Amino acid sequence: MMADDKREQGLEWFEKVMGFRPPVIPDDPFLDTTIDHLFANVWARPGLSIRDRRLVSLTVLMQFGNEQTLKLHFGAAMKQKQLTDTEIDELIVHVAHYAGWPAAAVSSQIVRALRAERDKGKDKGEVGG
Image (cartoon, rainbow, N blue to C red; front, side, top):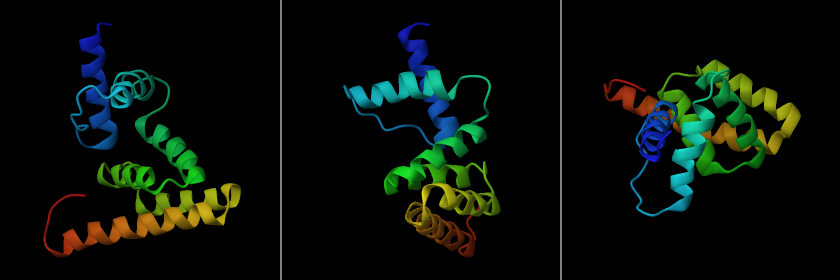
């Protein structure tokens, strides 16, 4: 696959997974690798759905407790309707028993804030997410 084709596939998969186009940051090796490898080669692989990969990713991310990355992935799962509120709650409870309460508590707080933000938009009559 040509570099331009790899980039286009990576951009397409990034948007499918995250729900938005990645930022344009010229000459950023980390972002380039994220798009050209992680999204073009890993997320695009057959065998697991985006939803399945999302569950695996969230489980690992919950163990690390990185709030910004968790917010991105929980937010994308909610916006793209890949996981219901009940499924997210069950994931957090399940991971709490294997990864520990502190890891789950961070995720629970993030999800609570994302839901409040989402529901605030619904109260204003906004459509979507």
